[in-house]
Image (cartoon, rainbow, N blue to C red; front, side, top):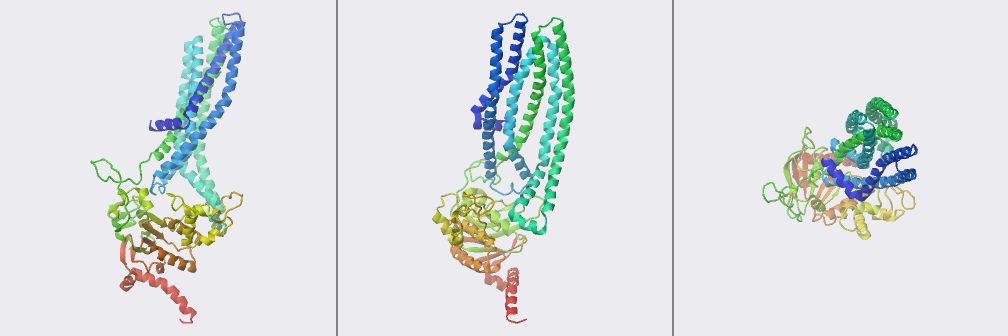
Length: 609
């Protein structure tokens, strides 16, 4: 019922008046054949000299009925198209509004949830109109069936009852088909997602280099075809079940119609009914055969639509994945979240344990560390040590399983997510390369206020990419992609990896008033000269600001105020570069290992062993 209520609300808000008109037309369409049959009966009775209205009157009624039935279809088609457009737009928007309410990453990284989102996205395109069409058709055909059953009652009550009862097997079969079809859609959702994945790879220019070089195109195409074939196998099984059921039902319908026609003709021949009743009987049998089938089909279609719509409802009404803790008040009552103050003391992780799912290993194991306000902190360690997970917790993309992350002593779970994130700027290692203009790529760093061109260029200058972007064919209005054409029909200009790294840095720099700056491998894509320049810029930017720098290039972190070394989800050691080198621990070993490569090159260049 929750899905039905939500669907009814969507229909009412999207196209309520149009739907009302469409239902009136459906009623007219349903009653039209019945009216035509009765007026034809009256005409025949009048021509045969039996009691009936004047022939001229019945001719006019037949003509008017035909005219009305002729006008209804084109009007109905227009209304159907407009209602479908409005419903698709509202549902599509509602789906992504629901996804945007999921502030964390868990839902997007959960395969089961992604399957449900896939089904919901398909439902957003077709289910509302399918459900509405089913109800509309049900109204139309129920009136048609009711009218013709009333006509059959005048010929023989038992005859009408037998014809009506013949619809029961049809209804049961259609409901069984609907259940099988919705279950099949749920089973094939992962296969269709993988099919789209392979298709996207085969058309992605970024993947094309490896695909062409390693010759994996046919391999990926075969994988894609295999997923489609497996999904089609599931669909074919349901279609065969539907075909077998329809064949059996056709035999039942034909048998019932034959018996009904023979009975009616016998009554007319015996004088129990007039000649005009033959027209009603013939029209009634044809109309009922189609009408009863349509009614049962539409009931099943409604059943299927609601079952699919439930996936949509679960996505758009899903509870917050990052709930805000109560900050006071009576037990069981959630009050307003605490505001996010300017960072004064710092951020701390208190005995934080975290894993991405039950059954998976712990990524963080009782991690405790501090990021002092106004100081620069570096986080280093081997791959898998938990550095990126710490970043996700600081941005509250996940919450700790145990322990807490605090902002000036306040648990992040007690702070509004959006307000917290406005206090943070970040350059991620896997930063986005948006297929938008250069200006838009930078402006996305702070959409809370207008980003004028001067402000965008200032951020680009800080990142050392202003000259590059200004020299593009359309300057900052140049699309940074070849996937779309610009306003003049020309292709955009893709950037190199290092240039994209600078654009990402400019995007973060646009949020100049952020309390915390996170830089995850900010110079990994830069050449040595650009890296040196970027380090000077970052050093100036970090001065007096709270920053967290993650890097495998230890020469980039040596000047930070403190260095925290992670190992197996815990703090292995921490201190300044000099202190850690003197300690001779893990950091010192890694630093000397990296330095040895450069020193060995220097020695070989000078002819020394």
